[in-house]
Length: 485
Image (cartoon, one colour):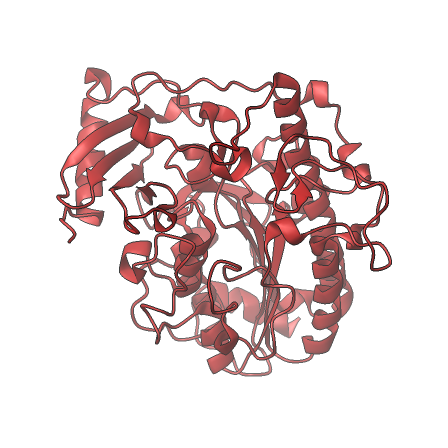
């Protein structure tokens, strides 16, 4: 009873916690997961996320700051925007230009928490530094690998009947794979098992336990029982139409899924349907692993003093806009699921349309746990919204992405342009700016009523003139035009 009462007091903003009363944090992140959750209106089979939603506030307008792994994760885990960190690609570890950056888990560790990492939390693979060891109280687990390395292991071996169901490989693996193997044959099953073990290890201390699932990121290789949950013919039909009137710079070459010329592949309608089926199978596989962790929390005896947060690092396209993967400023890439469950919260099981950004997580969690705020945070605490779902602490959300999408892999090694985007209650407005001069080379405007389809660029439309002017001003305030050398 005392811990529940204290949780309520913390949510209401009263004081800091003693060590014995501190709220714990179970911080759960998925990868490449747009809000395909039943509680968001999706046909996805997500019973565990649905149960979590019933004890959470669901943010229906939550957005990432850049739709690719490293910039998004670096941003949300430091509470700073990509421009502040100068991180816009996967190839630069955030500590290279920011050696003294304060991280969310590191801040909890500094204030007496056991900070533990299971799975993919910081970005992996492309950077020389593996994760961020200084942020954690113990070594990270299964945090650094290539997604293509996630090959099915049964008793330490690859199954003999390894299936290749598509013409495209994802690293060493088939892009789509449907095998009747146990959950722990793949990364996320092992992540869930280790998270359950670590929870038992830390439950008697104040803890910040980060659990990073690798799915639904490609490749699409969930065990067969998760594919079997869906009738492929009944999944939403693909509309691959590009929005009319939108400049080519808004799009990318989908290289993550389709490859690079001369080895780039195109997909038949049947293959596209298979990939979309695989994305949903990955979602349900991830959801089942999440369920194991949530059950372990419920069985631990500390659920009544543990905040549970679920997010994704960014959204994803599965063929819409003729795009596969992420790295755009469209709504499907920018919008993320966000569920925040606080013990004793009066607003549990409800949803809000108040805007939230991933950089808001750092100040929100520290305030909920009664910790001081570190300097330099650029997000805004959402605790006022958790108390009163009709309130709002911001009137817009901002996302950005460079062109080329993976500029660090190009000969120039720097962006040619940066796309900066603002989502208001009425529109999404985007400017593409020349990197060297700062001049605007293309603009986009989509009515909120057209999202997430975004099939018509209505920039300079008279009916949205006032909304466009407001969005333009918000964008210039957040991203003042500038030239780069």
